[in-house]
Length: 292
Image 1 (tube, one colour):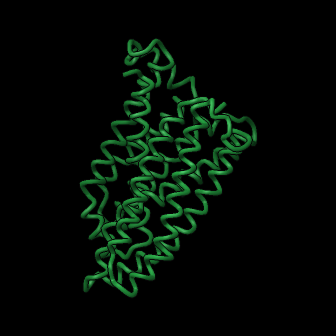
Image 2: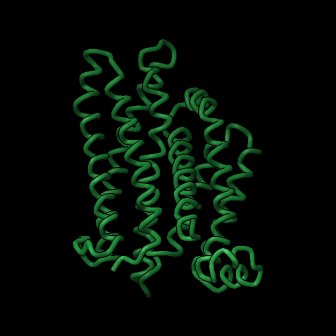
Image 3: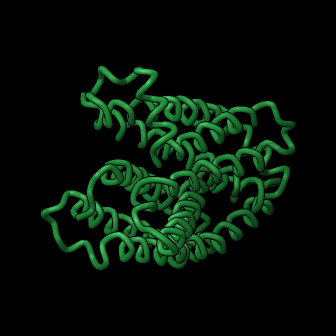
């Protein structure tokens, strides 16, 4: 395995973990009733703690891997002088400093009182997602265009993460529609997710189009570049996810009101999660490539 491949895997783990934490914590902390939020949060606690451990570990690994790529390969993985130079003299190093701070704060949320834990995790995960705009393609422009690109990328990351990460607690809330006490809270939580989801999906699509124009100046039509081939696949998958979300909301939700079967709703949510993971993997890959 080359350092480049290891970095892609590390980025995949980092992105998936932080998106899960951001989306689920923001949803449970802001759009779900306190009682239901605590109940679902308790069921997700092992997954959240695993995601936090992955986010912290992958953050620690990213800087040495970047150093190995910039330097002479694996031999420079733990060379102190090279690591220091990359950390202090490059955009990726400066971004890593912010990520390391965010990862430490995220780990510290485990010691927060339970009433503040979800919101604390959401804030730290949002910071980690925004730190991704400090390097890479979001920082490829100069002057005011760089700021516009970073802001747009931040909107894209936060809206996409809110949509995808919230799907995991939604999957746990859906079966509660047929139960006694939690039914009203579950119905309200899912209605709020639907409303917020419309906003998130719209922002994902609009900011994604803007990002493509900022990076390529047009559509990804030159498939001689791996970046543009992979970006095209990503666009297809995101459109498929949006289509599934629309079918779920406007076809299966009305059917549920008549037949009270959550199975089609759950199948759609699982399909969105699977496609979302594929999108994260693609972004982790083509984020390391030259666009043109």
